[in-house]
Length: 281
Image 1 (cartoon, rainbow, N blue to C red):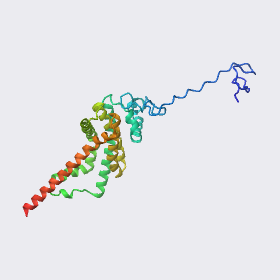
Image 2: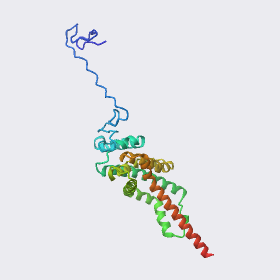
Image 3: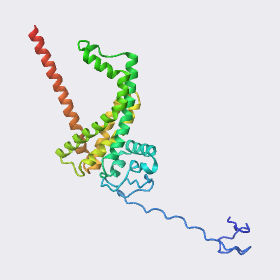
Image 4: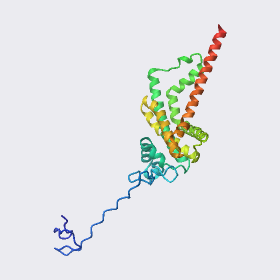
């Protein structure tokens, strides 16, 4: 039961504009806030409950009108933006890449890709250094090449680990640009480019979120490449408004070509060894 704020006597229902006991003027109860309008099925409009610290819209459709938590890092903080972006990329990749803007510059997505890629590289290098310091070096096959043995021994040492920590971000950045260039060429050949190179580049940068699984020993190095390919397919399909089949072809064709080149090189090397062995006999 409502009480008068002045005399604390109970008020009759419905509440009038004056208290019947003391005559004090009563304020009208505030009206409840209006409910958001219902969205039609399949609508691309922003949904209530989506990331809203700065206007996250899951329905931008890759048209450049949305935003991401990473774009709001100056307002919400670097760590918060990093965690929110990574959680969305790994947990809701379709929603993230549909809302990801495909314009706005290369610097911001490159910063995210280099940061998470470097963290994964450091974790993987640390585990390798610890493992090799325990089980020893695996350079017995290069005993007849002392210069190669010395180089690989340095890479496997703790000095090599420090070098990867200091300069690893450079290799991550180079890898991002090369990967984006290869994928974009594949999309051009398949007729799947609608938003330019920057759309492809942003997908590659944010797909680097899978590098954080490298902090899990052994399993992370198995899951990381597969998960990265899956995110690349989802991201390219959303960023360029193409089917997942065409996006998968653009992602898997370079992998297939690389495997074919490796098999060809192995066969050529085996053939050269067989020819040399036959000549020796």
